[in-house]
Amino acid sequence: MTGDRNKSLGAYGERVAAQRLTDAGMTVLDRNWRCDAGEVDLVLRDGEVVVICEVKTRSSAAYGHPLEAVGAVKAARLRRLAALWLQAHDVHAPGVRIDVVGVLLAARGAAEVEHVRGVG
Image (cartoon, rainbow, N blue to C red; front, side, top):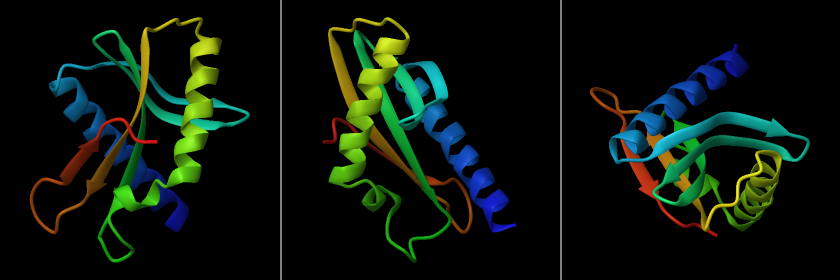
């Protein structure tokens, strides 16, 4: 059951993040793209820049804020995945950026959403 709950939580966080980013003017190009090297939660376009976005969702801050889950190793993996996505889709963007969105559920009301641009 825990696996299903985590998948549901993650899917919810990705929907919230996608909505927040599209409200900010970005366009979603891809969701949950997978390859042998891993998975990219969201791929967006922000003007001429392709944005590879990792979404971390937590039901509480008991184990830290969701953004704390993306360190140097994960950022390096996201850079590799960005290159693979661009290659697989034959996209030649003038810029590529790695962003992270942290979604923290609230006891009541809307989730807390924090968007960090240009990590790693």
